[in-house]
Length: 278
Image (cartoon, rainbow, N blue to C red; front, side):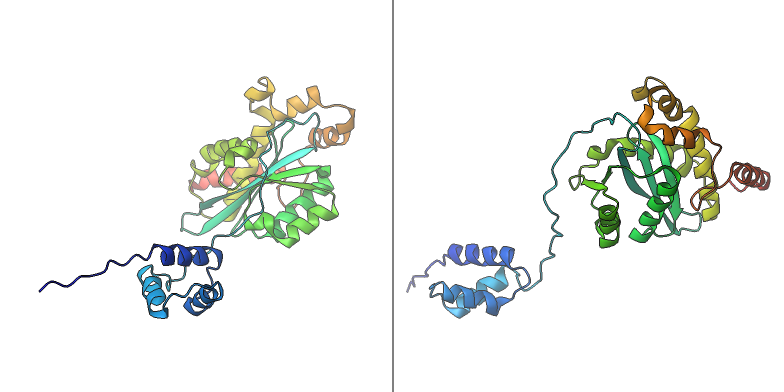
């Protein structure tokens, strides 16, 4: 004897459940079924539950973090200093495996490295502190270009920029080339410092980073600047509106919370080389 076995066609139920799961990922079966009945779809509860379990929707889906729509803007070279800065965070580790993070800030006009600051962690309060120090030394930019990291999305950072009339230009997620100026600087810094040495302490990172910053700003021949170094380009191309910046970069390195004096850097470097730490 042969029995007819009806083929189940659950495509409509599957489509509806997937639609609800995408729209309301934090809800469960009872909520979905209630919405289905409210729409006038008289599907049997057991049938909907069977399909719900088949799709494994009871395993909560990870919700993607939604960013506001970021508009792609072309990289433009400012006509003077302190118009646009670019900032980014890098990661590395000490010899004992402890992670460190480094904040790099450059001026897009002459690609000058304004800040290389390493810490064990880098919350938004440290980013604000770095900007406050730069504000005292040379002023602040009109625009700062950053990625969508939590340090740059925090209320502390955004409120600080708002209070200083700084426009935050976020790049699109997953598009680091939209922040190409600082990304190129990061490559040089990683090759010459982070990948070149083993660090026993954060102090060693500070010392070698500051030596690299001085060398880069004063001697690095930048192809996009016609072979001039960032400081030389500022001297040659800087206009009257950036006189305050010229006066600062012409001075010998001023002490601050982020940088060490020239004498202390040289002294510490000699100590490190003598002890053959690296």
